[in-house]
Length: 431
Image (spheres, rainbow, N blue to C red):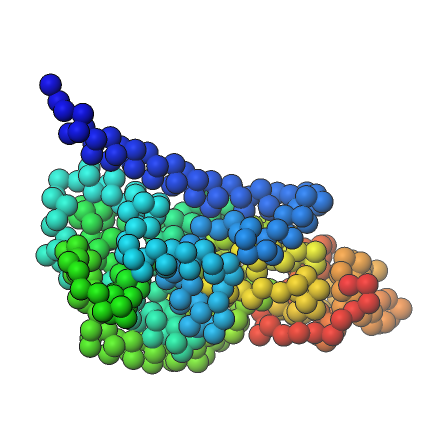
């Protein structure tokens, strides 16, 4: 007959596993359900949607699991010189890591749970990961070095970003780029199935960031205690080589921030400069999921390899609504700067241009000023030609929202929005 005391560890393990599964389900609900709910409210012009936006503005009411990552918070703080709201969630995880190292990984991380369950199904022993090189400190050093120069290099490898991206890929129009947001989590599961614990202890930047925090606290407090072999192996990678890679990452970040962009894409409102945006965007998909007009999408190769899967605006079927700034309120790295709605209304994200050979008024002499009728900012001027009013865009007023483009009756469309470097623009009465 078994002793009750011998069964206690097994019961605790089962209870812990059940708690982790519940935590993962809760994060999945937040990652998928909460942004979709907000977007649906806003799309329906529901007053509740406006109240939800007001809640999003308060850091204590965040809807995004990515806010829990100290890795993302540190990268964004280094790159933008400001702490991304709601930073207190990442601070709580960081404080836990200071004294319990990977407690978050072992109890709350949803990606870690999926990787662990996949590893249990694999045939290789759990400890086999020690034979592989520990790349996590190197990746972290490169990323932080780039962040110090304004362009973090590997924020998209954060496990909470990859988890969030999987659910965000289910929102919006289906494309190869949008579905690719969800590939990262699947690759981690596949890797863990073949090589248990390699992701968590050899590649994961969030786990390594927690080890780094704990190591720094130990050094500061001059504590000497025996560490878990995996933790010691991770911290052991933090040395001269990591400082060298920090410098290399800084050079890479500096160069990336100054790379030439032949054609600027349209970025969501509040985006940082194009050279920095590709590195600072975490590819988490929060902005894609929360957009009520479904015009924010994952970029393809048109933005270059560096900008692959970063957030871009594609006008149609909706436009960038003048009553919405939800995307900037759910960005975990402040690649999209938070701003009041009034400031967003006076920000140009692009400029519309009329192609006269396609325009019904300019080319065929028909009475058509549909673009002017739908422009919420009154940026269309009427130019009289042969007794017919023809549209002309005032670039000093146009915000690039795309309302004109989606309502243009001409085929092919005669008025299109092009990307520009975002800039404040003069207010317009009643805009």
